[in-house]
Length: 466
Ligand code: ADP
Ligand code: MG
Image (cartoon, rainbow, N blue to C red; front, side, top):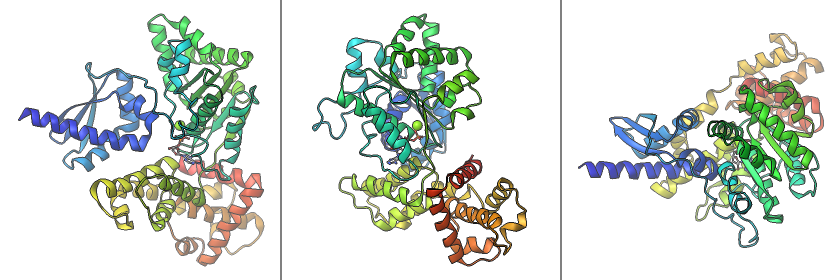
């Protein structure tokens, strides 16, 4: 009896883990989820064991909701997920990733920990695996990300650092990590012996604190100071901890002096990293700062097409891709996750790839994308941003100072809410849907030509989404 229960638990856990791996990608999966064990089911509650408190907290914060909802799909009885620290859970292992899809074309590519490990045994403790799916080839380029893309390419093909550091920033799920991994692949392809360390700022801190407690700070420092390319992802998490900042700063300076390339990412610009010391902040902006803007409908559709085309034995109807591109506007990660979930339903459960099924499977995501922002909030934010009166959003005045912000508001309403054009028109003083469509086109066009509009729209979007 007990044996069956344990087996069932294991089986469910395996299904859940497979689905999660698809959603979060190999890199995140092996860092955060692989070390977990399914400890027990207790009524409607699953208990998951993590090897360390750090990992437990991280998973709790970042993945607990996903685990719960995926588990619910596998076993509808499960309603809650708890995490605790279990000694028998395995400690995180950093495994070399599977070779990239084009490995046969470029046999020189080797996983991050491999090449470097020969010369420095410690390096594999520090660098996270490089995700084979994140290559330049797989990155869909559009106006919103072409600058960051070009900068990343430049870094990966130059003999000497063309700018140092390269600082990438954007909201979540817009491709920063993808570009960093792509740089690593490209550099490794050209020279497998280059020492590359890629890790999250959080992991950097974790490793640093661990080195402190085991008295191995010296080798830690040596290690970091001997790499050719150091990439630290999500540095907004470094703030606060003072000696880590200190360490980061010194490592950083030394590497730059030695001519090693540094690539940093964050969810905001260097000057907005309030938790960082001033000198660290200003140092970060010495090189090239490149931001990735939120996606447009076209980019989302492009990404879905490219993803779907790479799925073996699945033909996803255009109608479904368009639906997802239209409705899931938050970020690319969620967009991909949604596509994967729908396709899963079809490959695992044999459900057809229709809008109905998508709507059913994605209820939670769709709702989250929907309730996020209202037209009223958008109007309020625009009025405040441009110093207007609330009535200006409805008025018939056509002078540029009022009309342009109103168009911006309509554009944002189309982008950030699921409202239809006629609905949006009604909320802007009963305008016709063609007026809204014109506004959306106009702003899209202006964003390509006029930096100030682009900045306004971005600032507003950030404010609304943050
Ligand atoms: P970030 O680090 O900015 O939070 P990621 O790089 O992790 O975002 O991207 C989230 C997911 O979206 C990844 O699976 C990534 O491959 C995908 N993605 C983001 N931008 C693009 C793009 N332009 N083309 C293809 N995939 C993308
Ligand atoms: Mg990232």
